Length: 275
Image (cartoon, rainbow, N blue to C red; front, side, top):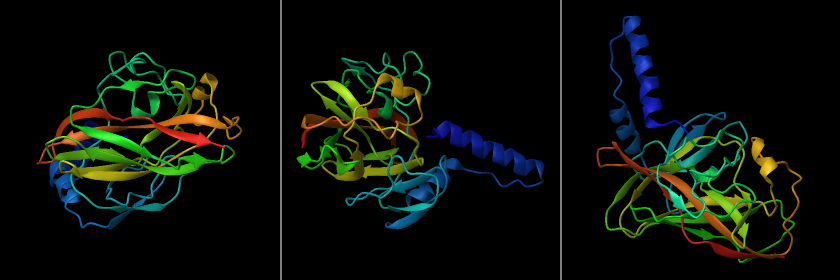
C-alpha cells in the first residue's frame, strides 16, 4: 500500500508538471484527504485493477472488499471519517517480526523494521506474539465454532474495538491478515495479490468496526512463501482443533488528518474445530 509520503511525492510531481504546462493551481494533499473524509456515509467507491488505491470507510456492517480479489472492478461501501496510508513500525516478541522471513515471497523486512501484518507469521514458523498497541485498539476473531476441513474457504469477520480512552482516527487495510495455527505453529496465513484499499477509522472509546475475513483450512510450507500466492492444491490440515488470529496495520492521524504514528493491531486467538 502506498505510504503518505509516496502520495505526496506523486501529487507534487503532478503539480510540477502542471506548472511546466503553464498551469499554476497548487495541490494540497491534506485538504484533499480531509475533503474525502467528509464524504457522505454509504458512499460507494469503484475499485479498478490491482495496485489501485481507494480510500473507504468501514461501518458496523463491514465491507465487501477482501484480500485476494482478482483484477477487475468492484465496489466498496463506506462510512466513517479520516484517513491515512497504512504501514507500521512496532515490534513483537517470541518470534519478533524483525527476525522472521517474508510471508508472500517479497524481500525480507529492513533490519530494525517489523514486517507488515500479512508477513508476521511465515508458514511453519512459531505464531508471533504481538504486543498490545498503545492506542488501545484490539482485534477479535469471529468464525464458526465448527467448520468442514474440506471447505475451500471458511468465512467470518474480525472486529476492531477501541478499548482506550481517546477517539482514534486513521486508516487500515481493507481486511486483516488471518493466521491458522495449531499448538503455536503457523499452518496457513493470508496471502496472494490484493486490491489495495484503505479503510477509514474513526472510533470513539468503546466503539468498534468490522472487517470481512476468510481462511483456507490447508497447510503451507516455507517453499510456498516464494510465490506471490499459495498453490491451489495445498493439503488439508484435516480434522482437529485449531486456532485463528488476526492482525492489521493501523496508521493513526490527528483531528486535522495529519499522520501521527503507526501500529500493529492484533488480539487473542480464537479456537475453531474442523470436522
